Amino acid sequence: MARIQWQRFEWTCGADRFVFEVADGGLFGTLSQGPERQMTLPMVAWEGMLDSVTLARRTKNQVDRSYHDRSGARWSDPEVLRLEQGFKSGQSIAELARIHARSAIAVEHQLEKLGLWNRIERRPMSALPPFPTQAPYPDRDPADIQGAP
Image (cartoon, rainbow, N blue to C red; front, side, top):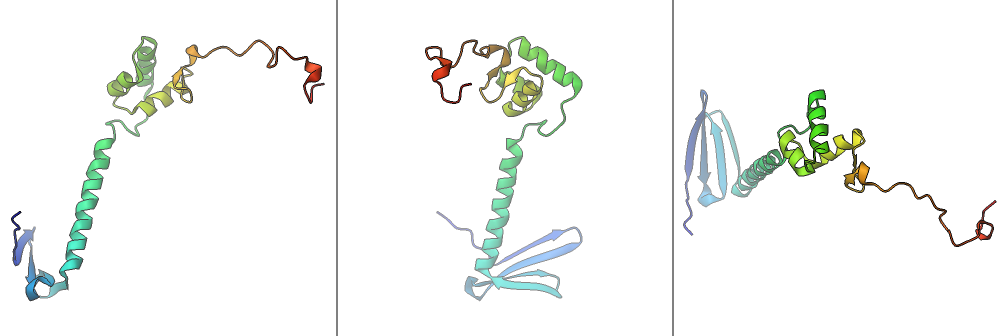
């Protein structure tokens, strides 16, 4: 693998001119902004700072891409109505999330607030079985159960 090696790098930012120079056989680097402002550090320190900046930018870009367009935005009344209509017409959670530019979790949460979705069991509320109508121990006499009156 070919390595690019340089001893001096110059750039401008607005009216300011910057120079980075490598000295002492690559052991030290000096960042200068004109003759009066200079900072010399070991190259290991400069490399560590550049690696940190690169990692921070990469992480920020990954985080930015993972959010949906409407992530964190309030649900408007018309949007909630469209969500409810879409869900009742049979659209899946994934479809609704894509349509509304939200995460599936956000869609499930909003449907739960509308009383249409059980996020714990991850299914529509209308599909939940009714409460049991029989006693918890149908084959036992209530008098035999400890603590029974």
